[in-house]
Length: 420
Image (cartoon, rainbow, N blue to C red; front, side):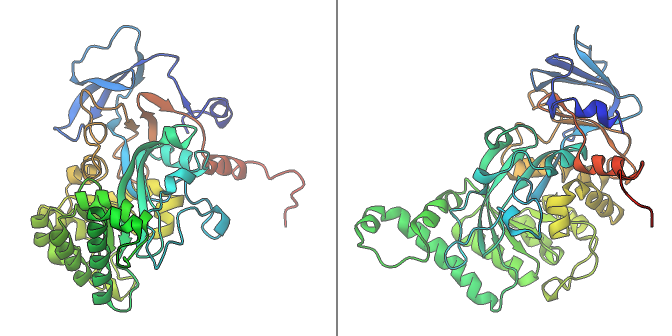
């Protein structure tokens, strides 16, 4: 641990570095993502923005210096599928704010970030594990609602949210008749298009019954316009092929999440420019929809030219309690054939591009936000630790609940505890 927990506890969660607005990370091996690695590199951040990256970069006078000699320096990691800020205890319903009731399984109107818990005990742990930005999204129904892209710093949801809506989330999982669900999605999208051209008639009651509520139909307009992507969870090959067809029919900006059998249609996904959010750890099917699951899924997709965004294969563990473990998904994907550079890209620039924020985060380059992590070694290795995490040029400080529990139970037992 970099400092004692007592010292860290005295700091605010996101503290200015000695009051300075200029930070220089020096001497590390820098992985900018948009270019080759830089040995003995320097990253300079001024007022939250990166102003220089390279070898031999001069350190500005008065800058706070972070010595990264012998360390690895990367952009802050992005996890594209979490429930951070929306779920505290999975088994306790009143701590879950990620599922709206909706109407007939449709909750497109749902904007869960308005209930985001900026004081969630899960946020410090995620930051300390090297995550600086995440997608947090709803679950439930076959159209779950809208997702937000958040930076993991701030004390209110307004400060946390970088972009909302960042995507619409839907699911083809756990269905009894796939063809019926495909047609229901087509009907919903067709009705949303019809509603957009006949709002006046709808308001006067001179419209046929539509497949969703007014709020849902309004929420789907950016999806139909292609300004907000729709992320559809689909494991089975036939489901993924349906995503490709429906995206083509309605000119949607679509993505596939999980995608156990996506490797089977990798060339079609690449041609359709549909990114895939998938993991790198599971190598056995969890149900009949994922019989084709294989560990080299990400590698095969990337080889075919598909943009891959690495997420956790496990729903609950990866989305809420250990979202930082997504870097181990990358490590496994690399061991199964994905290149190391593509592994890093899948946790940085690829999600930034997919969700429309690649001009701000996902790489180390002048003009980008100062979301930077200094690692003790290869971030995909289990023993590696994030030694310094900066979000918009400010260093994240403070122990997580996990740190506090480890500290408590590795020392003396609590007062009054009787050894059995």
